[in-house]
Image (tube, rainbow, N blue to C red):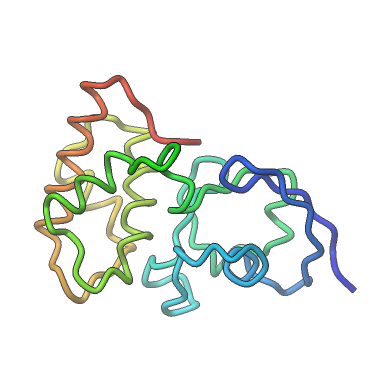
Length: 163
């Protein structure tokens, strides 16, 4: 028997019946067709599934869907505004911080959570924040540069990342 939940996902209220053992990642991908968050390790080690839960970066594979009841979830699909890319997304493209793209949504969402809490992070702080996100293609220099660029752009525009 399913558990009824109501969760705000990317600004839209969703009423769902979820299974007791269903992960937030499975709910997003299978019930809501939001496939940006990726299933990599399913153990919370790779960061490919990171989303924001009440503004905090979480590994969606480790959070039960029922735990999202009454809370706000932001995925990579909900990061930008009205068809426009978020500054982090633009910076990742500009710095060629994307190759295969599998890790990118998790990297971007982790960086969004960081910039929400710390709009002017040092390179060391970015490295620490992204330490739970693995990339096997690009290397991290372009990713660090992208986050630094987005932070600068967002500060200049007076922007904050979403909750």
